Figure 1 (cartoon, rainbow, N blue to C red):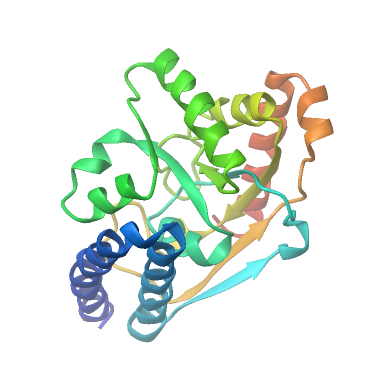
Figure 2: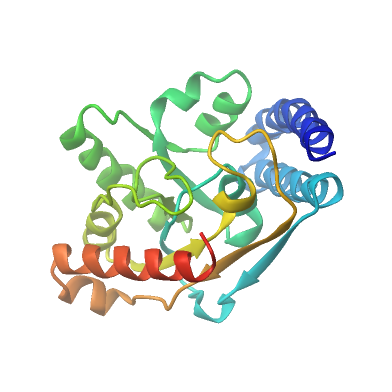
Length: 238
């Protein structure tokens, strides 16, 4: 039964994602907000199907830590679930992700048109410069910047190699950092076909204000973020 329910969800996901991506593309000339509406609706629709077909519910904790000003969100990356949920978790934002995703028909094109920051992971120095330039501009425009410090998905129970790009951006652009942990990889595993019923919990950790970001050594802040995000991830069962 899990196989059939997961198969139905995967089919719906593969059909609806290009459709909503096309709507984002078509509405982008009318402004960011017009296109963003469809991105949020895509997120809501997919999460609704996830609950209906796979029995996976979404629970959000720590909203009291969310700042009013734009910031850099540094999140655990275990699954596709957090990318689907992000439009309803935080205010309008831009991603930092691998540039290869832009090559995906419709979905990748929509990402590019929404101003997503696509980096080439094989050139770290150039990637950092691009994050500084483009990420700083997006923050000034009033958008949050979302980055997965591990760079790629790490299976539940494992830890990827945390990179300092998000911290460098926050320090240079004079922005705070909001960490986020979750257990999505347990129910929607990395490259996993079967979706297991249960509750995915997204938890925002205490906000790190600008003053603390700029006064803390980069290496110390990276260690702290990794420790805190991973500790809460394990606490949630991820």
